Length: 606
Image (tube, rainbow, N blue to C red; front, top):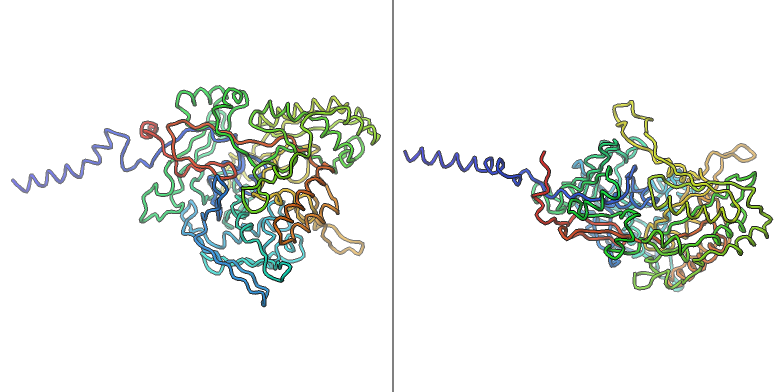
């Protein structure tokens, strides 16, 4: 009898988990909170190398990929993928080396993140056929600039994976006036907080150009991975799911050790009215992109910070307009800038300041956030329109505006960019030009849709694809800073620093191939400007370097190859049900520590 009782009790104990799971959604299978949000506008390509042309792409990519270092909201650098590093200098052998040891973390498919993944990602950016403007961030590495310019092969880049978790990085020699090493290691480490420099898996990236457009063809190193993406009209959505391998030992650590939420769910079928109504009713808990029509209403309720980006109009100096290269005429570029009422546009956008220069607020003057480059440099541009001065510029250049028509190209899916373009077009039409706004839509990608490897349900962002190869007349772009250093933006306008792909298909008079050093994507080229950037790159004094960069910005805006419109601001709304959400200095969110009050009641029935 006693044995039967014991057996019965044991059976009940074994059945208890099953009984609990039948009566409640909270059981051992539940992984954590499902947080509904409107994180960002629709994204079509999650490649971190492309994220700096699209604010929404950066917001999502920052959750999917892990940089070596992270910059906190107050501008402090912290280790993330990096576990430790040491620096060794030897003046006699001219060897300056940083040895980096990586943390144990895995890609979302369980494969360990290795030093080779870092080497591959950086070589990808420095390849002569790459168009990444992040290339100058890596120029402190020995031979990096020569590799990018095609003077040395990619194998000459002095970065090595000496084992799966250890990198060796050698630097170009820099000596101060006394002959002592003066390499800015801290500045290089700050560069490594950029999401443009995150590790990537060669076997994934080399499979197809569309590797970052679908969950089935990509892996992630960050706190989240893409669980589901759909462009279907009735189910237009994006679901991010916890990466169970992110900075976690799967055998020893709790499932939520490094990432608290299980899923972040974005429903793109919702209208602006739907988004805000659901936010107010507690059905959406975070709004990272406040709809334009609601910005005025919520401007005093939102968390607002500098976005480290400038909404900028790129003028293609190589574009044939009315039978000539209209934007190659300096006075035309100046006139177009003078005609814009930046204050009015900033007021309409709400979360923005009228641009007074190209470098936005938030970038460092020297080595820390204590001094702001923009505040030190002051205002260079007027924020109000001056049509009389603009017309005088055109008259002096002998340009009859009514003889020319051109397009401002913007992505159709970005309502803010479309509105800005319409306001700018109106101003330029007032000068006499015939200006239209081209709203460029994404298209269905069917290049590889018939194969078994690549799913057909992906989209191509034609606006960005055309922009990066210079196929535009005027393009509205958020010029997002790759790092906290003004050099990252200003250097791109100098020959040899633009990061643009090299033209290697040309031949000289003897039929031999030769390289053309790439100019800026606008076609801008100024020898005096390039000399300034070269000098800033060579100097060992941070204060002298900052002085040279201010001089470069002034020279650049006198030439006006691009027209700064607004300093963008980051604005978001978060319900009190959430806690623990953090931010980076770049204005991206960190949801890995986010907790949701009473999360169990929001878990969907499946």
